[in-house]
Image (tube, rainbow, N blue to C red; front, top):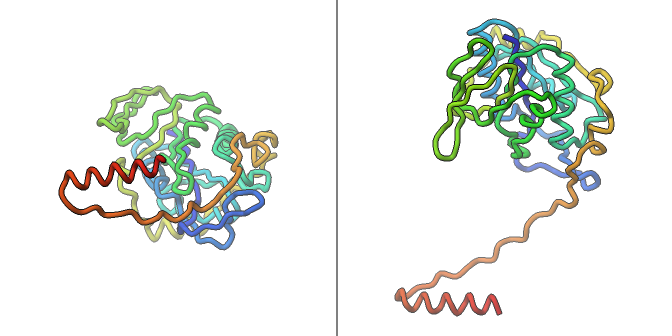
Length: 260
């Protein structure tokens, strides 16, 4: 079973700075980690590889320091890491990011399953996984909490919903995004950390994946950030005391004044 796990390096802190010219995150000098939801994707990929055999590959797109998250994934049991790093990718929105990742997956070749975390902690859009599915024209199931069975080029999964869960059968190859309920990520072993330290990370630039430069980076991003600002501080409210009827009358009066 050939498995591809797509992950992202995100800032460890919420105190991030924005480039005022490009309205993009300034990642240089900020400590970064594996996106928390992607750790569950890595673990599930390793478990499937251990159960069915084959190969598990991890891909990320980012600056050169994103190599660190690939090595962390390898220390957990992933076989190979691929880094998409090129100035041409800078400022990519979710559409452009999913395009670049899908182009890299096409270069890798045949696969059975793509696994992504449900969303990134620094964007919270949950769009990249489904975007990859659309670019590759493969079926997708989002918010997967359990893989029940993989058999005869089909996979049956439990998909989390607000009301409970759904049982969905999907043909392979396919893409799934996973939630934290699916597993508990393992800690890297000493042997795994040694292997990760010595592993050779594959580096690809835009020409290596035959990416259309009009479809990546700021130029290829349909979503543009017009302005970023800090909301004004909230003004303290009032605490109304007294009998219920009296409070209701005073509240109505205050609301009328606000409308007027």
